[in-house]
Length: 206
Image (cartoon, rainbow, N blue to C red; front, side, top):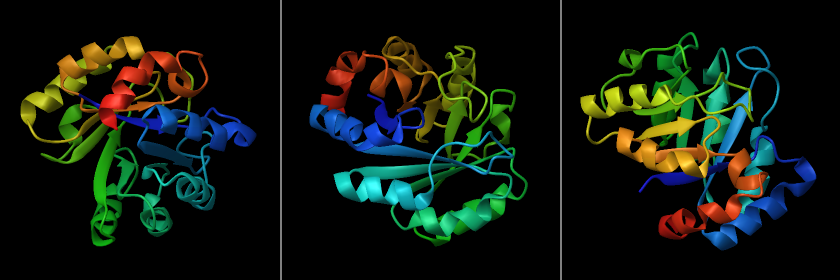
């Protein structure tokens, strides 16, 4: 059963706490915080301080997805409250950021954009496969990413493999069959009116 991480990128700031609490009551146990530098991906997402405040207010587990050209300088702030931090394989010096994540006691992960091959990810490292261009929250899911997930799962039976970008409830079964055990869900969970369709999975995640 894939772990569900809720992304609030598209949720208006005045509704974020209420949205988290509503899904928390349904069984949500993990938050996914996106951060961009405005260069690697268009401006958006969260500052570490805002994400920390919302995380502390709800007591949920948290992970960070850093979409930045030079993510190393961002690591320490996010490692204060996130147990998993993901940086992009397309970022220069991503390996230094991965080392820093580990040194800070967090699980490192590598995100790969749609055009990046699965082979760039080191064996057994957690990997987040993007179905959409980073920073374009609300875009439609591209199911060709499932081939990449399958390739990664065939190469490693144990690693954490995630999907991010346009994930809807109807994609869960095919994602799981391909080998994903971690799903980042935003619009379909918080804004589409389809949150009730996730209740069975959220209860099983709880």
